[in-house]
Length: 406
Ligand code: MCF
Ligand code: FE
Image 1 (tube, rainbow, N blue to C red):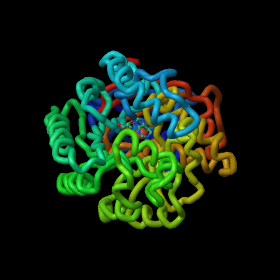
Image 2: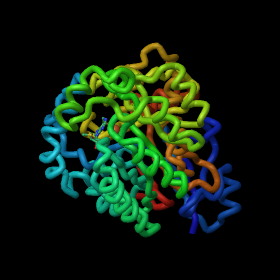
Image 3: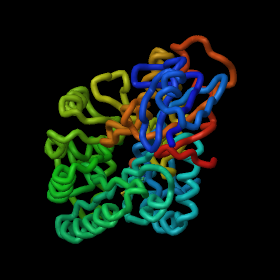
Image 4: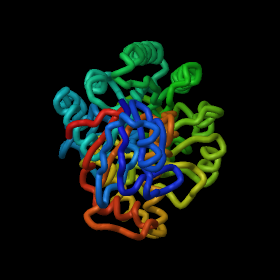
């Protein structure tokens, strides 16, 4: 039996619309006036949500690290190299503390803030069980990391096992297997070539951290800077395994998700745009790790907004992330920029992970987040801004047509 949801305002790919409702079972059947939908689906259950409500597609957080969810104060902020040293130092403790209960709580927090899909970067596969259990759709990004040529075969075999495990899930668990390359400096080109080829063959979503810090850029371009000592000490390596150019070439012809990209040049962003790639923008993570500000004013590359993990953030809440973005990009024209941010957690986020969610349109999955503004707002051009300023939690959430108890 279908349901008809009648909010005050509906957020569609064409913008905010009043006087429209949505009929759905596990997918969206139609968007039309309440009268037309009632005539077409006379047996449908009707839900009117009342004054101030805006129905959004469920929000999508394309980049999180659940396995690092136990971090609160263990990791050092302010400078990328110092953060990385602290990750090496605290990694075992963090991974041990991040048991299923801790990771599940992080997923619950996301659900309460209206996140119905997320991209989980899985370094070890320790988060698969939780991802299978939670109600959200999960793009399960199996990460490959390792720059030592002697260990490539072993690393790749381990990666393949994790890919297989995430591919063997039941459809109702809503897991999409995917590939994550850790970063240009940390993955040997032979491993990059194999993992990218696998993603292309299987049509899997593909993601990589890319030019996050200025240290990364300096190491890749000149073999100098903070990474020089790091690679010497931990990896007995004297020079970078790849160049920026060579790394980018692997992804040609296959639209992928480049995370951070803070230190990209205009020319590199031109190339990302030309190849149909997306950037995942994580403003709070970038600020905390001392990486700088991604130039969102470069409109050529479509952007998804994401939180990154609790390894570099204090919450996995996209409302908070959007508020931070509003403050960080202080020169962007306000209401239009707010519109872009909403798009960056819905439609553009979905496209960046090859998902058909993120839009209230017939045929899309029935994933919704309902929010309620504290007062009426007549200025349609400000609805995105007011949503971002006032939303602490979603009032209700649906995934695959089912309303979740919050
Ligand atoms: O996105 C942030 C910062 N950039 C890179 N990596 C991570 C982040 N949060 C967690 N990580 C993980 C990454 O997936 O930390 C490890 C990788 O497994 C770093 S490599 C020692
Ligand atoms: Fe990350």
